[in-house]
Amino acid sequence: MKAMVLEKPGTPLHLVDRPDPMPGPGEIRLKVEACAVCRTDLHVVDGDLPRPRLPLAPGHEIVGIVDLVGEGVSRSRLGQRAGVPWLGHTCGHCPYCTGGAENLCDQPLFTGYTRDGGFASHVVADEHFAFALDAAADPVSLAPLLCAGLIGWRCLKKAGNGTRLGIYGFGAAAHIITQVAIWQGREVFAFTRPGDVQAQEFARSLGVAWAGASDTLLAVELDAAIIFAPVGDLVPAALLAVRKGGRVVCGGIHMSDIPSMPYRLLWEERELVSVANLTRRDAEEFFPIARRAQVRTHTKVYRLEEANQALDDLRMGRLNGAAVLQP
Image (tube, rainbow, N blue to C red; front, side, top):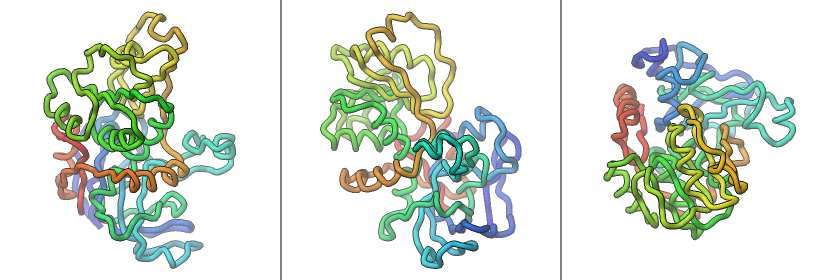
């Protein structure tokens, strides 16, 4: 098999040949059709997230065809299209797993971080954390749903049922969940980096009520806001934008430090919460909703060996929608 491998954080990935991986008990092997590139991959590669398993093939928005199964896995899965997300395994017995919060498991494995991911021609996954996907759908279009979509959905649920929703950082997750929010009947206000006219136009093309710079104070108050950009300075700005009793949801796995801010921004029962990982229940809820909402992902395709270019385009904000690697 071929894989783009991280040897040391902060260095480029290298294309290498590896022996084909073999699935163990309870595992499946997928021939990768597509793997989207997530900002979390960027955090892993750049060294923002500590202690990745090295050497490592990143990537956790994987779509592929099951071509081999391990002991204890039904052969009916062979030939099935499946999707593999960030959360790759949980212990099943810690208080979080038994309490319905497996996203907070004490002993998890994460795809493309603590186990090899989809920047490769083949990948092995826990069969219980590989979701059956539509065999007739385009794998490139499906791939961003495996993290950008699922995390966006978890953030949207955390945001509550308010009508006016602000979204800070208009990338892969934002463009997916904006479509769902508008389908639900909400007004979406898209906040981008000042001067990023391209991202603002992209947001408007999806039907947002307003798009502009993140330092803009709107004339209307928001019911809730989701921050997808990994920028701590946006937290006080979002708190200032939401109404009394409103909620700000931080959707990233990594964020720069939140600056000191006056207590009055949090007062009047405003809430600041984070979203960590995802659960299998999120996928059960989200994929049918994405179909009903007719979500269309906007993608740019790269060859597997162009992974470094895809990461750099994401790093530098040159993408609308999501980058997707195809082996």
